[in-house]
Structures are given as structure tokens and as C-alpha cells.
Length: 386
Image (cartoon, helix red, strand yellow):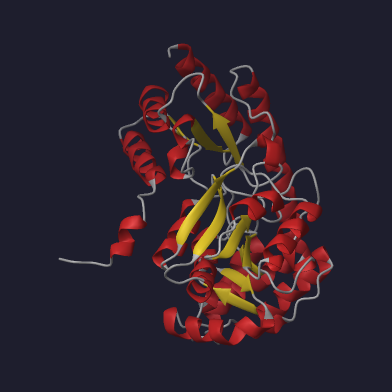
């Protein structure tokens, strides 16, 4: 049977294989510490759950407009005004089934066969795959400590080609957790604008910032396509809800695409998300951010003695991107052996990096402090045998 050849550009997500292995070991009675999946370990905040239950009780189960519940679009706009001093017309906001829905819309609008897309390497693999499925070629630009693990304006100038139409940024990023400053982000936006290109800014981990106040591209530009999610900071992974802020001229074609691709985001989830912006919920979310900050420090200190702590600590998200080259040049084997020998599940870097992934791994600090400390002890035992 023949299928679309673009599917061949979509690599398997190897973390899912590790997750299946970890779950099988748990089923067999082993005590597995999960640090592999990019999902907060906190439950959805109670005010959001209550709002979702109320929506179901009140019969809010029919379709919303394709661009989303008007009240939710207004609430998101209010969120930008309150926390980022950004004026965003609610009409520029499209609510989507997860941030993946937002990326799907943006990729279908902005690239086509023959387009080239710039993005940092390492990066979240689905970003590459969405663009490849739309027919684009990916120019994955290797980043490191010298650029703060981010694509910068100089790299845009160096790697932009005649066929390049789009640059994609992520701040905070997955898998490294690093952020762009306002000056760095503004410089990239200017560099792309000079070349008459487009920019997508992935802000899915926005709010999970530990050293500086969160930043949004909406404060700097009305032309950037900004992707966000209710999954990470707001703790609504399974509710499948995200949004896209688009330039005014792009809203109409994006709405047409949404109407045809998914019709609308889940209605009960949209009603539930209205509670995410209440002061009660904000207090819960900020406490969780402080908890994640503490966990980050525990892992950084614990891994330092093993020569595994990153020399540039992540400023956001809930990941550490670790160079394991002193112990292994095969991150897949490293992760599988760590799981089988010490029952710690982490993610191989080859999921995220086109180059260098074989000697990197990603650890998610989405577990309690005591479990993180135990994980470090197990990792220490493991590497002592390598």
C-alpha cells in the first residue's frame, strides 16, 4: 500500500518506547522513577476541574465557533494585558485542540513544498515534523552555550537562504529549558522581518520561568505567530487545549483552516479554561512554579558531583539537557540500560537533536524532591559501572 512520502520524514518518538518499557517494568513490580515524559505531575487545579464539571452539568457540550469561545479569547487577551503589558485583540486569538492544533494551522498557512524553515537544534521534534508534513525542508541550526541554546539574529543572517520563509523559536525551549531575553527576541524578529520572512514563537512553557519574569513576543510584535498551551503551566495536558495569536491579516485564512481541520477545540475544556485566569487558580499555579524551581536546584546540585549538571542552568520549562559524553556516545542505549539496571526513566537526546543527540539526554523534573534525590543516587550507581 502506498502512502504520502512525507510521512517518511516523521521519526518515531523514542521517549514513548522508553515509557512503554518503564510501564512494563512497573507492571512487573519494579519501582520506576519517571523522569522521561514532558507532563507536569500535578493534577489539574481544582478551580479548573470545577469549571469543567459545571460546564458539563450546564450542557456546554455543543460546538463553539471555530476560533474558540469568545469569552475565552477575551480572557487570553486579558492575560497578555495583565502579565505582559501587551495589547492583543481577542479577534487575533484562535483557540485550538492543544498547542499541536496551533502548530498545525500555522504550518499549513506558512510553508509549502520548497519552503525552508530555520529552527534551533536541539528542538522539540514535532516542530520539525509539522513543517516537513507541510512540504518544507528543515534547516536545523546547531546551538549551544555560546548562544544560550537559542537561535539568535546572527544565526538567522548566516543560515537564511532565498527559499527560507520561516524561522521558528521556542522560549522556554524543550528540551534545554533556555529562554530568549527581550533584546535577543527583538533582534531575531528584526532579522527575519528584514528578510521578509515569518516567525513562529513557541511559548508553550511560558510561565514556567525561574530566574526572570516571563516574556511574550506579543509585547514586541503584532506580526509574529505565537503558540501557547494550557498543558504545561496551567496543568491541563489531557484537556487538549492551546491557542495561536496571529497577525490580523492571517486570522481569516486560519479560521477557514480550523473549520476544515478540526471544526473547534473541545467545548468543555474551553469553559474549564476560563477558570485558569482567576486569582485563585493563579495562586495555585505560582506555588507549583516555586516547587518546580526547588526541584531544578535539587537536580542541579545532585548531578554536579557526577559531572552531568549543565554548565548553563535552564531558566525555564522543567527539563535538564545533559551531556553524557564522558560516560556514553549512545543515548538510546544509555537510557535503556539506566531503566533496566536502576529503574530510572529518562529520554534519549536523539529524540530532539539532529546533531549531538547521541551524547545528550533529557531529564524532566516532574517528580517529588525525594524521588529526584533517589534518582540521582541511582544514576550515580549506574555511571560508576560505566
